[in-house]
Image (tube, rainbow, N blue to C red; front, side, top):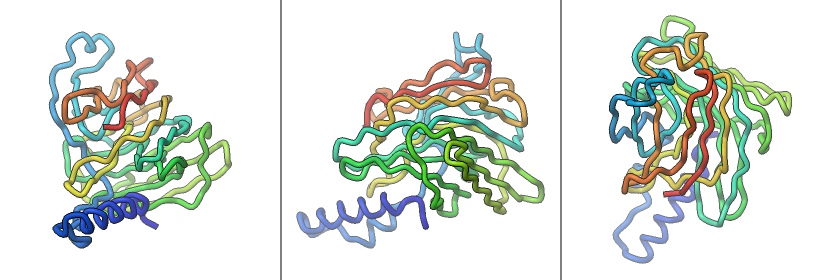
Length: 263
């Protein structure tokens, strides 16, 4: 089952409404513009300034990612743990993803696995998924609930093969998927994402996840903060206002992100 069926349903509903209202939109056009996710939508990147004292070499702004990424090397593994946050839904369709992955910052591919908090009406929906972008994403049938302890990793095993692993130690399940993709492995990241896409190709509204805390973030088996070319990424809207607040990278491995706004 594709991870974005909820997004697809919401967008098709929206497009159907536009068709009735204007007679100019088409379901086929809307479907063509639905995407399962993908690389960072980078707005700017610069030297980190004062953050360099924490081992951060760059600060970047993006419309769909926030968190930390190692971006100046070749990476064979990435891992982190987090507590599934509690979603607060106000009735509007909104989406938030939490994941670890390789690629996507300097490349057009992403190998990633994580969890979501999505809002369908007033009810938050929680689930785990994996993706080998540009192939579609797929969700797991396992139960995920707020407060669950999640650990995930993506590992390059050689000859364009990857192993994507995620476990919910609170519920006692784990999943591993393998995939094949020719990719540069030019970044390793631990990310909060506002998934893609609206009918016009923009990012979807960010669900209110409160605060999510990541621990034990590593790249190539060492602390993410020592992995080289570490970039702190801030998610912004089209006006340049932050959509969440990302803390410093404590001990090179731990940070939190706090939701600020949907758009």
